[in-house]
Length: 380
Ligand code: UDP
Ligand code: GLC
Image (cartoon, rainbow, N blue to C red; front, side, top):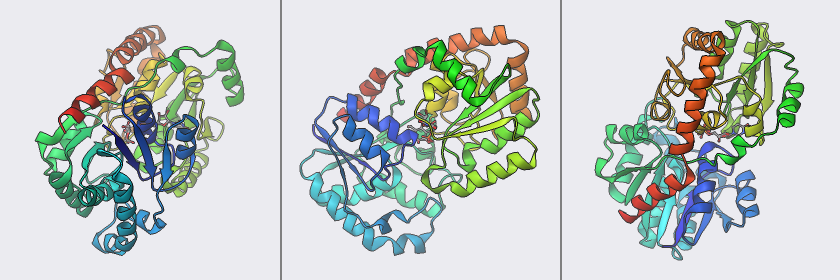
């Protein structure tokens, strides 16, 4: 079974990091085709993966999640060129595996032209918080018509697909697995170096990890840190996918609240396991349902208290009071309350974090992901 993996972006979001692990562990001859060039192409190439960049005009990428019909129609000529390119390349494969929503739309027509099977690795919650009604309607129609299988990254993601009219019989679930090794082998010296870099002193460090974007909720994090004197808030992540304006707003907010001494911005980093090991608490702050949430599993693997926003795939990862803490999405007061629970009983919190670590190690392995995807592909 030869697989052509398609992804619209070459930036390093969670969907791409997960695809990397899937491409490098699934036992099939495969190639990756990206719609733009960048860091993800380099990462794949360095790992010896066969990767190419489609000769698409960038016009195909101008459709945004909030786009209406007019914007979509304007992008059509560029999309047609892209589809023809993908269809030509797909001839050498049995399955097209679309890793993102735009890749899926292009993949539908390329699969029809090349008479290849198409699976959709669904990593987005198809809700109003993430997609315009037009985009939701179009993608679900296309999925019902052409997707041989929809492999959701959580039950929540699969349910959201069915809720907007997606054919439930096509859904399989495969959780993104994460290699525990880098998270359990961080040296004390590396941790000390990070604490020095941050200028932590004796303060407790509370970190939030993820790309900077309105719905990832870093503003809620900042408001919660404002309510919790004595701790330093560490924001790790870059403004991927064109969210530079949000970063500027967030920095202004930190300044306006007089928090520049207590909030640090570290930007996009590649040393996530080390940074997580240096934290005392790790927060997940998404205000809309998180489709899965790699950062939640990573914090658990790092053995840290994980305080997560209670919605979406996160509810399948972590149980409040047993393997971590949950709070109402978007509510800084509730987040500050959860942080206090942890800070007031650090010993009790460590026991919960240990249980979280054991659960994440057992459940969210790359081997399990491969098994689940293989089972789904066998049904396609
Ligand atoms: N990440 C990273 N560097 C950063 C911030 C985040 O490598 O500076 C990684 C993080 O470790 C995680 C991924 O980006 O593996 C984010 O995935 P998640 O599923 O949490 O969110 P997504 O970006 O896919 O919505
Ligand atoms: C997407 C989602 C994220 C998920 C990741 C991996 O980027 O936003 O929640 O963890 O894909 O499937």
